[in-house]
Length: 72
Image 1 (cartoon, rainbow, N blue to C red):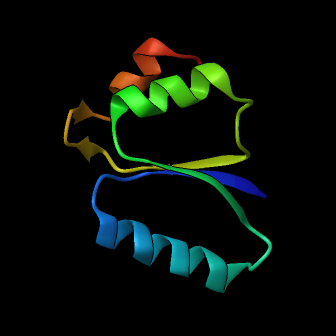
Image 2: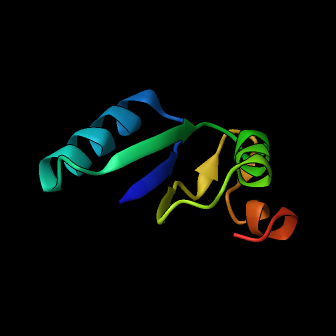
């Protein structure tokens, strides 16, 4: 399974990555993105992952803004 993680806090990223690897070591994390801008850019330039984990409150706004800018 290919996943991306949208999280702006490094400690939360590290914890989530550890949890994912514990659940299934074959999970491939394609990207850890820290902002709406980076997330929109990623979805605009890459094929969609199988699963994406979104932190709702990012430093540059609500993660829901991503859905207004790209088809996810």
